[in-house]
Amino acid sequence: MLEAVLRKFGFDDVTIETFGNGLINNTWKITTASNEFILQKINTAIFKTPDAIDSNISNIGSYLKNHFPNYLFVAPVISKEGKTLLPVENDGYYRMFPFVKNSITKNVLETPGQAYEAAKQFGMFTKLLGGFDINKLQVALPNFHNLSLRFTQFLAALENGNQLRIKEAAASIELLKSFSSIVKQYEQLMLHPTFKCRVTHHDTKISNVLFDKNDKGICVIDLDTVMPGHFISDVGDMMRTYLSPVNEEEADFSKIQIRKSFYEAIVKGYYSEMKEELTDVEKNNFFFAGCFMIYMQAIRFLTDYINDDVYYGAAYPTQNYIRAQNQIILLQKLMEKESLLKNLF
Ligand code: GN1
Ligand code: MG
Image (cartoon, rainbow, N blue to C red; front, side, top):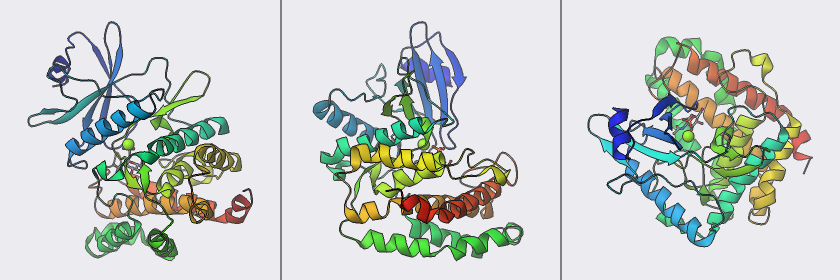
């Protein structure tokens, strides 16, 4: 199947390896005699309108090319028929990107300097697109970071989901309910006139930043979830994925920690681009971004566990339950450090 897709891009003799660690799409690295590429199959169970993604990437690309020609925008490869999105019957949708020469992607964050660079790159992305007409963006995943809806879906799962799993996860369920003031705070912010809607990446994990060999950020990638949104999504997911030395898969919860130097790096990196753009209400909710995203991710993992893993799937039976517990502990540890971290800035 992949060979047929590759032929449409004019490739015959290539090596194909699986690539990366995304939970949703399938990704391969393609090596030809002279170049490298990234091929992806879009998971249409989740991204139901691949055309929307394709058009967003194309519109953003044109805007950046016209207004900021020096910004490295990784545009999709055009097929022999002139397309950037290739439907394959009874299979799915494919697209390909050039692998940026000499770029490095990281699955694990090692230093605060890397966190600074990543936060700067995501901040820069939103800032450069400050003049882009947000109404031109199609919403590929409606309500993706709508915490109120995620909470409602969690409550619905408690009504209709797997009873055995609900019993097993009782303690985690109670903990998540006990943090529901986060939903209230989110709802109040959404009503605030200066809590702004901006072009938001919505997936700011470290592997979505390209680095050079000196650990300097080059640009951001994976624009599938770029939609109108709020800065708490991007900054919050940085906190969720950069602050702790271990990620959401870690089952030894004693390894979960909040590293102050990485928090500082996120603030400084993001502010190096966005300080003048953010309103006071937004700045006052910088710390809240982490609570919002970690709480939402804990809810999403636990909801999925209770719904028999329909969304994320599971490599072993309790994977989503472990992930949810991991995120609850991360949230608790972050909240313990609230005054320490808030007093830094
Ligand atoms: C999914 O596929 P990946 O890893 O980029 C998910 C994110 C979650 C993340 C948790 C479309 O992202 O929202 O934060 O898993 N993406 C979608 O690891 O649901
Ligand atoms: Mg992604």
